[in-house]
Image 1 (cartoon, rainbow, N blue to C red):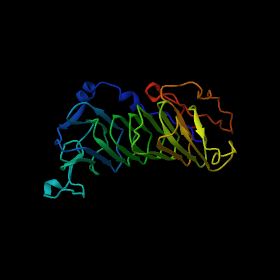
Image 2 (cartoon, helix red, strand yellow):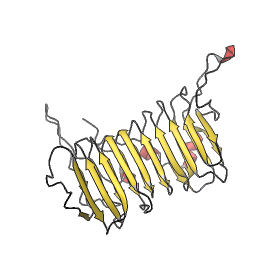
Image 3 (cartoon, one colour):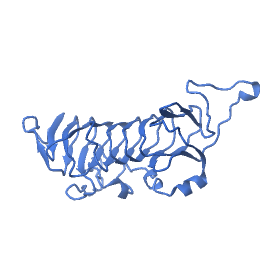
Image 4 (cartoon, rainbow, N blue to C red):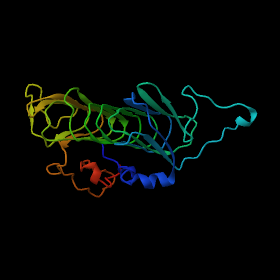
Length: 304
């Protein structure tokens, strides 16, 4: 069972007012065309933390914290570096391309590392692909959302979906304000713990799979007894299926090397973490992951 790492200080940083962020970082903003309904964000190299916030505003605003424009040594000789995505057209290490239906925001590979705070109209669909080493926070979106994170913890909160979320190497914490009923939600994690909060009155068909770790919940699920794993503490793959509140949209949760916790939104009872115990060398005590609502979490135990 994996242990939740200390959640990034970005969680607290993201709650600071936008005015404070703008005062310390380089800013780029624009109003997309009325026909735009989707934003695609791609960061393919080592960047800092990424904070993406859905807002009521019409404009897209990007703030780069502590960004330093890299020097191109060849520019003096008339040569410049070029990439398949183009060159930085924002002054903060990003290329922005807009077409009739979507806006594409892409990190330029030779840019210096920076934390980015990106504010997007909350009704837009969102596609995010992050392959850097920082942590990611995404919050306050009402449309379809697709997120793939290769490295680092990811916190995705106050969304309604449908959602397709994947983390490869990090913890994944997700909270729904409501669950969209017209399309399924899929959440997968390769190497990290997964904590998902949904309203207790959600109507859903649930499918949960874990290869090497635990599945826990405090929701009143009507399990499919024909498929329920009779060996609660077995080692190896387990699959749990059932319905919540009579059934509804499919919610699929899958993990390879990490716990899955499915819990009531805003309910901290019944799934309290075990208190940490001091290590007794050479053995290392295993600590259950914290499942407190992420807005109230300041830190959890670091990996030993």
